Image 1 (cartoon, rainbow, N blue to C red):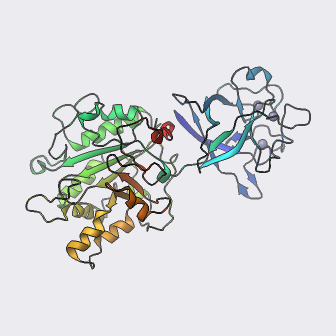
Image 2 (cartoon, rainbow, N blue to C red):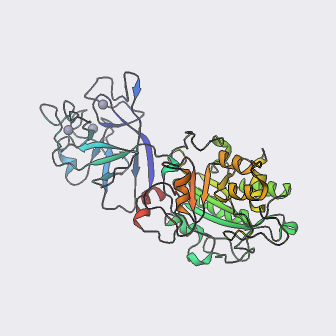
Image 3 (cartoon, helix red, strand yellow):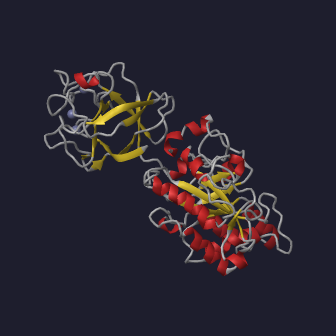
Amino acid sequence: MGVDTKWRFCKRCRSMFHMGEKGVCLGTPRGHTRRFLLIYSPKLVLFFDVNPYDAHSQGDWRRCTRCNVLFFNGNDAQNNNSCAAGGKHNPDLSRNYILKHNHPILEEWEEKNWRYCFKCHSLFNRGKNNIGYRAYCPGTPDKHHIYRGSGMYYIEKPRPYQKCFFVTSHNSYEEQHHLSIPEQLDVGVRGIEIDINDDDFDRLNYFQVGHYDAGRGCYWGHGNPNHPNDKFQDWLKVISDWSINKNGVHAPITIFIELKSYTHSEKKVTELENAIRTIPPNILFKSSEINKKLNVTGSKPWPSLQELWGRIIVVLTNFWGRFAGHGLPAPGYSNYEGFQSRWRYHLRNDCNSAFVAWTDEDNERIERNYGSDDKRAEIIQRESRFYICNNDKNLATRYFNEEPERLIRSDFGYTNPDGYLINFPISDAWSTALTSRMYKWTI
Ligand SMILES: [Zn+2]
Ligand SMILES: [Zn+2]
Ligand SMILES: [Zn+2]
């Protein structure tokens, strides 16, 4: 599947045209334009070569190389349409665009009022007050489009990353999924979680993948590294290689790296950064590419999904103790070491690849253990773009009443069916109604 962001609404003839060519516009002899009175129409996003279709997807929409508008070329339409350039539209060289058709849900990033004209077969916007059908049809004597009985089409504008759901697997490297990471990516998973350990760091100088212990639970081969290769960056390479094989034609992949061991020492922090940087720089979307300084009520938006197309985003997470979710420190360690690992990375100016997540435990625990003068957790909270609400979906609502400015990962089994508060609903049920709303985005 591909995504084409070059479509615009023509402010003269109300059709959809492709940027780069003027084409033939019945509204002005100068050709289609997205500008009127210095106001530009927004980007419109069309998908092409979607596979599989669903009941609300309609294919065979094409760009006419003569008039440069979008028109329907399915059924017997080829023989009966009318082109503003005279004669028939020419679909040669066009991609096969797929439109969302008669869908019960209008998403907030979609434009409504798009209709199909039975005479010229183009898509046009009839406007809020329903006068847009007039004057610009090449197929009727009075130039009015005929659209009674047309389906309703919702056309996307760029969709912000933080408003998307991404199908996410828990402990993605484990054999319980019976799918390797590349196989999961093939079926649409776009949130990956990897646990890393420092068990043998002093000897190996790299982190190892595994649950609690290096190598534990790993699903070897099938596209994952082969037994016993638990080297962290080799597992990352599996993901970036998948992206390269797709030529970057995929929704962004977000990788949650859970630090199962303490990453205090400068050497370990450096190695962590170096490992992440083995993802090619044109694929890795670094935290330094976006303003990290966002406060909770700030409005600095994320890039759109289209802008992040083909990219990989890495997020550092962990809990307070070594044993994730249990909050227990390892023997001999104080009980804020998990936080400290993220904090160390956050402090380092030369560590700008990964995003550091804030977790709902941070403030509470810092205060309990070190008093309210300790501002470390507040700083992370203010500056983080990811928020981990482990095991409590209500926390998401408490901190972010409506649209989260930050992305949230919920822990296993916890999803919010109502909206966008949890962008990474971690699940093994990859075909639920929740995930079907974003299915097309994930391929
Ligand atoms: Zn036009
Ligand atoms: Zn045409
Ligand atoms: Zn028409």
